[in-house]
Image (cartoon, rainbow, N blue to C red; front, side, top):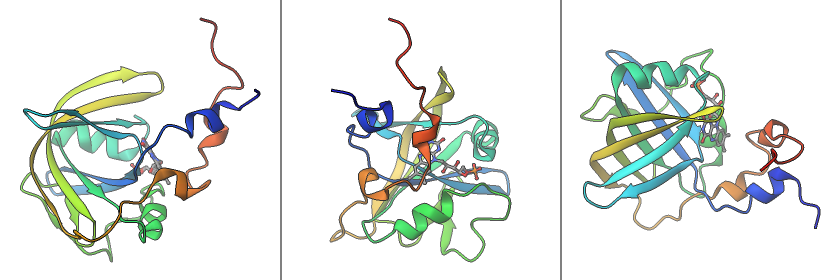
Length: 167
Ligand SMILES: Cc1cc2nc3c(=O)[nH]c(=O)nc-3n(C[C@H](O)[C@H](O)[C@H](O)COP(=O)(O)O)c2cc1C
């Protein structure tokens, strides 16, 4: 078997989310596939973010984030928020601030409002855990967008090394 690392890791099932961040009046949002639940009580989630993203600074400063779950008809939103924040990505989008301040997308399938708990180094990313302090299902009859259905949208195949590191 001769699978590339991108093909192999693509077999790990993931959804697609728009993570909202806020620090004071500054807000941003970015598309993320690396999101998972990590605790029942308190309800907690973790996400993995590249510290070079402009969203990371706002996340560290504001210590709040939202997780907007995208539906299977929202590939366009995944592409929009997957772009770097050279312009205001929230301009022209329908959103409102969560109690913690980070953006909730009006048309997301569901959302969680989270208080940052910990930031841990994880290779070229940072693993961020958060306690969910609120949330809602907005489109109960919709199905979530799956990462495997986004194709090469994130261009991530080029980011893997050619081979595993030595054990
Ligand atoms: C489908 C998809 C999934 C992505 N998943 C992640 C992720 O889990 N973590 C991450 O740091 N970036 C992820 N990205 C990349 C960011 O969305 C992208 O780099 C974005 O420009 C960062 O936004 P910012 O510069 O406004 O912070 C993903 C992009 C796409 C299109």
